[in-house]
Amino acid sequence: MENKVTFKDFKESINLAVVVAALGYFVDMFDITLFGVVRSDSLKAIGIADPAALLKYGVQLYNLQMIGMMIGGIIWGVLADKKGRTKVIFASIFLYSIGNLANAFVTNFEMYAICRFLTGVGLAGELGAAITLVAESLPIRLRGLGTTIVATMGLLGSVAAAFFGKMLNWQMAYIAGGLMGVALLFMRYKLADSAHFSKAVSDPTIARGRLSMLLQKERLLKYIYCILVGAPIYFMTGILFTFSPEILQGLGYQNPFSAADALLYGTIGLTIGDLLSGLLSQKLQSRKKSIGLLLATAMILTAAFIYYPHTSNTSILILCFLLGICAGYWAVLVTTAAEQFGTNLRGTVASTVPNFVRGSAVIATSLFFYLKVSLEISSFVAVTIVGVVWFALALFSVTQLKETFSADLNFIEK
Image (cartoon, rainbow, N blue to C red; front, side, top):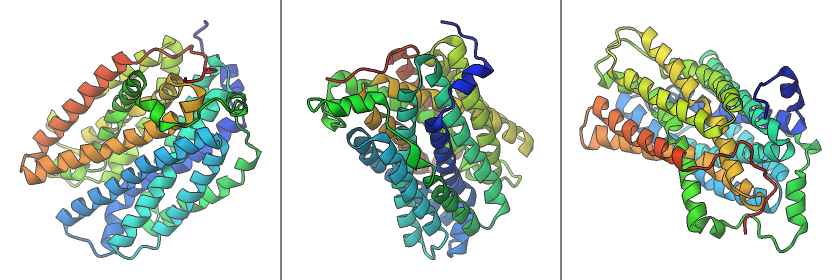
């Protein structure tokens, strides 16, 4: 198979499904990143100002959002296989758009917690259903490019959130995200499910979206490996970037540093990395090699972030940018997860895997917080322990997955 990627290939890989999926993921990632950017300002606005309290309640809100995404991933994934990919795209965009708007009007922590949880549930559905639809609607040689375009556009949403979150009042930033989602709903009506899914629906003997099928040993291990491969992405974005001021202060760094800046540089890197990881996958004709190379590089850069004696913000921001590039294997990961399973389980897997990857941030941040606060371990040691565990599990897991670059997706799980 020819491994040269041309402009014609990119042009051929763009259809309505790719455009709607890409814009939907843009709004999706805008909201996820926006919370990290406006976390401190929004909490201060509702009366939480103490630095220790800002960290405590920030972790709680972040974790509630991620728990919502894990629960939502299961709900939307099953619905994507039972009712259709396009219905899930519409419903999830509607829910997280309403959630975004509601976030702008919270007046206390309890209201904020409910809004972040419900928004998380909504955010859980769009990516998995979109990636599944795109992967099933494009030919083998183009589907990697199609999903790369979706993920790259989504991460531009993160960059936009980092910019707008700094430029706008936190309430206006949330409103902007909600209105973008509402506008996107009007594009969904012309979407249709893939021929693969329609074929599965036409056969009443095929079980679709049945969670019990994932409990079969081989499928369950494959499913867990997909999640573990992606866990370092949210270690980097959920801990190193989001809580960078607290980590750096614990490392003895004295200069003022903003999480918004870390997220801005990191998400610019993520956007570039998502495009590069997809192109690297095309060049190597391998999903696994692309992921493995970026994981190994990210592990080295994480060590530099923790151990390098920073004297200015410049070195930190450069590392955030480079770590973002390495964390950009997200597109290849989600594509790989979708390709591992048959049409009747693909929506469930593609929706739940990325959200359990995101949900792994709950474990990472909670473990970090527990080591740092409850056991009184320094930030230096706490972040090192979490990072070593997460990267070790990911590198092992990527070796256990099958290569799916040229796999035919027209198959059913029995």
